[in-house]
Image 1: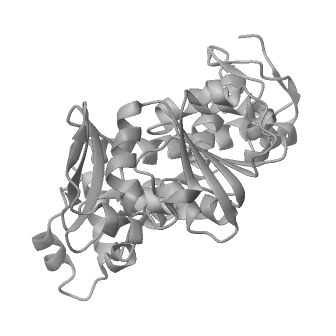
Image 2: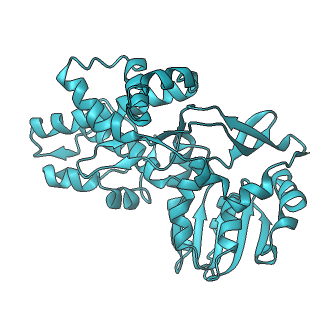
Length: 347
């Protein structure tokens, strides 16, 4: 790769690289844990660890530290636990999510359409699950948010051919909480899912209408036949069967707020996010939000940093030349990454 980074001291790059490596470490540890053994922490073990008065979050973190093979005899690992592991774990309260009105509508539904079906799954006591956007600190330290309940918690899901695709887990509720505060006027939502965002937006007095763009006719049919009739503000909601990007190509001057939720996680989300950002200008008067944008930007930041600092990296096209440490720090900021997303391409 042609060098695009100038006048940055080697020690400054090394300091940032240490942070990026730790970010990657905590993300990789959790990804493997959540994929392979999210139910590894059992009630019996937690009762034993908390018998002396130790709080549950501290006990849970100590178990994770052991599972992750972190050597707390080492100062570097003790620092990793303090800076990354401890703040990433919290005990969630089942009661905080039981009073969700939309959950009460969906619970008990068991319907199907083609390969798609609505059913139910559950978290076991002390099962680990992601809960909320990843955290980004001023020094670029980043970590995911992981939670657990001390009791069982059930939630509705949509499956395609037996594979879960959408759900109403605490993570979905938490990651949509802030965008919902900004929904107003005429709202356009890309991606129907279980309809949670559309429902919550329709409940707001300052929301006039909710247009949902969804391309899968089976998902639309499931929603319209099994869920929509139960919504008291259903007349506000309109479903448009269309590919999201085809719809985005149009110049929409009538939308006040846009929410894009057409990906499963950050891995498939990043390329779709970049594509959507390049069409954002077509909503010239609207506020545009993207589901789990902060987590997607974390993934993009790591790639941008690698592209600038590793001469063998060939990840991104379209990055500008930058000069000096401050310029490097600036281009890694969320604000700059959002602007870069409108111009760069993944290789």
